Image (cartoon, rainbow, N blue to C red; front, side, top):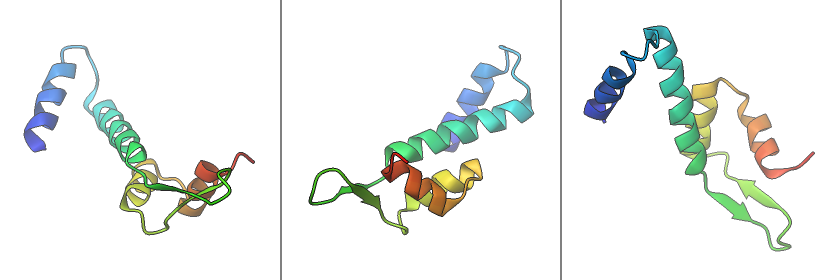
Length: 80
């Protein structure tokens, strides 16, 4: 929520973090939180998984970091 963001911003200002860097830091933190909320579906064989293209957390994660949606969806589910 907005109050929490404002408190966090005020807490890192004395450390000397520039405002432009604060935005980047909060964007990365938000992306990590969305990554933790992904709904990864296990496949029947137990070795594979999938993520819905409609997963809002995947969409937000990719948007925040500026990464390609289909590539991220692939790399989160495959080792190669």
